[in-house]
Every structure is written in C-alpha cells, then in structure tokens.
Length: 271
Ligand SMILES: NC(=O)c1ccc[n+]([C@@H]2O[C@H](COP(=O)([O-])OP(=O)(O)OC[C@H]3O[C@@H](n4cnc5c(N)ncnc54)[C@H](O)[C@@H]3O)[C@@H](O)[C@H]2O)c1
Figure 1 (cartoon, rainbow, N blue to C red):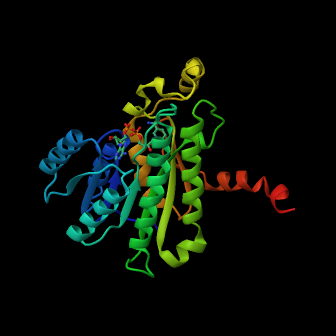
Figure 2: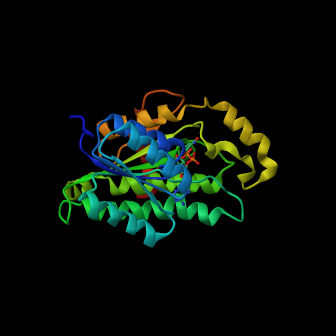
C-alpha cells in the first residue's frame, strides 16, 4: 500500500535551493501539514519561506537557519520543530556539497556524511516506536557516483557510498521491525543545480577534461524530476530500499540490483 504524505510534518535539510527547494514545493502539493526548511543560506531560505507562505494558507513552511555540520544547532532545529508542531514524520537529508579540494574535503565529509548520520540517528530515535515515537521515514540523498565507476570525485563519491551503506543497514528489516522507521536512499544522476557549477572543486584540477566528459555522458535532468522522484520514493519505498532518479525518468527501485551487486562478493567474504 502506498504511503501518504497528507498531514505529515517534514524536516528538509539544505532546503533553500537546488533539489531541496523543489522537493519542498512538491511536498506542499501533497498537502503535508508543515515543512521545516533548514539551510545555511538565510536570504534564499527566508525568501522561499515568504513566497510559499503567501501561496499556501496556514503558514505551512518555516525556515530555520542551520548549518548541518554544527551538531548542536542541528539538534536544536529538530527541537524547535518538535516543540512547536509536536511531531516529525519525515526527515529528508538533502544538504550536501561537492568540493574535493585539499582545503575543503573534510568539510565535505562532515556535511555529506557525518551530519547526515547525526540527523538520521536523531530522527530515528525520535520516531522509533519503542522509544518516544510512532514510526516515520528518513530519506537520504546519494548519487549515481556511488553506483558507477566515476574516478574524478573520490571524496564526494566516498561520502555518497557511505550514505548508501549507512541507510541500507539502518533501514534493514532487522531494525525496521522494531523501530517502525523506514530508511530510504535515492541516488540522483546529474541534476541542473548550482552544485554542478564549479569544476574548480575537483581534487585534481588537471583532470578537468575527463570530468567534463563524464558530465557530457549523462543527460542533465531538471530539479523538478528529482523532486518528483523523492515523492514517489516516499510513497512506494520499502525500508532499506535504494532508488535511482536520472535523466528526467520516473524514480526506479534498484534495490534488487544493489543487493545482487553486494552478494557477488559472498564467495570471497564468507568462505
Ligand atoms: N545536482 C546533482 O547533480 C546531484 C547529483 C547527485 C546527488 N546530489 C545530491 O543532492 C543534494 C542536493 O544537491 P543540489 O544539487 O540541490 O545542491 P545545491 O548546491 O543546489 O543545493 C544545496 C543546498 O544545501 C545547502 N547547504 C549546503 N551546505 C549546507 C550546510 N552545511 N548546512 C545546511 N545547508 C547547507 C545550500 O545552501 C543549498 O541550499 C546533495 O546531497 C547532493 O550531493 C546532487
């Protein structure tokens, strides 16, 4: 049975721009109760909050300035939502950067992976049906670089493979049967957002040619297609499932392929 978004309270990280902002708009189309939009970009976040609250009644959107890499602030943002709305049903961990340079790679790991794990664990404990909660959903954003041999983004790629390993494990039936918290992963192909804007953020700048060839290989999709795929993943996804959203195509459940690819190693791992 499809899951419904109607009346749900949602927290989205990195929601002021790119795919996150588009997801917020599609969520409003599903008649959610409230959306907390967390982002470091205050001006864009407040502008989007104003735009959406004048379009939809009941002040359905709240912007909270929050750097997800600041753990105390991230947990405070969860508390603000819980104290004001009473519950959180869905957490979408979207905030991410692409910057494999020597100056910034640690920040990239912190934002893309460490903060996503902190946010997921906090959401999981908050919604866990044997603790304070009544179940819920976490959607974590990965990338096709986690599923393909792309060699030009080793650190970004490591964070996105980490997202998959973490999310498929936390979402496995062994945990889901007790927690009632679905954990879903979605891997986007190249999507037309500011994230792609600066190829100077490569770990090896002399490899600019190959990365542009890599980019040319993919069909760039619109952020709206990525957002629609997130909604579909929420509605249809079993806990621990892995979804793909590329080339403006509908979301596709690739869990079986992902599981088979991991199982290929069984003979070496277990014998
Ligand atoms: N665009 C793509 O081609 C693509 C492909 C695969 C995966 N993704 C993933 O999708 C997610 C969204 O990417 P996007 O393309 O929309 O990027 P984007 O740069 O367009 O938007 C990211 C948003 O996150 C916010 N943000 C950045 N650092 C933050 C922090 N520390 N705390 C809070 N907010 C922060 C930014 O201000 C921005 O609003 C990321 O996790 C990204 O890795 C994107």
